[in-house]
Length: 299
Image 1 (tube, rainbow, N blue to C red):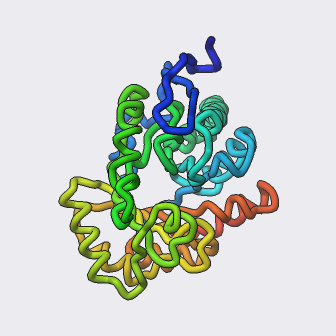
Image 2: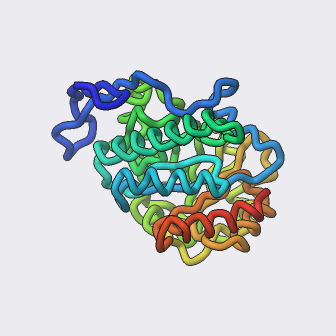
């Protein structure tokens, strides 16, 4: 059967505990910019810090997620991450990605029909930020293909990646090679991912991780304090990792205010990720105001 722009076919499961899943063959690429790949879009920082809105499919209905994503882009976000929770079924992840892509497509079309419209503004990548190989969707433009570098569990170093790689290849979405390092306080991701947390004073250690990331061929380094963390990544850690050339720096966790975002940006972050801020917004107007406040200090 055909649902919107995607053909649904049966697919064998590739995660234990999941007896059935869907194979989703994409017939239309998402909102890509014609002149660059997703990776080049992410790594071409142009000397400014940009904002990512993280949307957890487990925390709202797909249409609500789409509405929030569109408001976020209107307020200045330059990328949408979809993911977060570790046990969200792929059907929900996919439905969320489809809803967001449809919302962006509609707004891009509306902008193209207006003399004052900015169609390019809506050509923002929708990128999977998966909690595991079960949380995939071909409706995304790309995936942060991550190694949780300071995990003590093989599953998060290479296990989930091996399970997911064949399906990412079949889906045809871009893989963004990412070193993922969980810093204090770590939160749920540190616990679930069995992370040996990087402490605020571990500047030489985080430098070593950044060098390792480059030597592995990663293009992105993501320093994570944990979703909903009460403290953000130490600026000293960001500064230390920033001294390694060849990496685009993403920083997330514990960032809720413009002041916190500016601290991370001034320390060297190329991208600032906020997620809890979106979930805590009382309504779309409140969300727009909060994201605008953050993006305004990054420009």
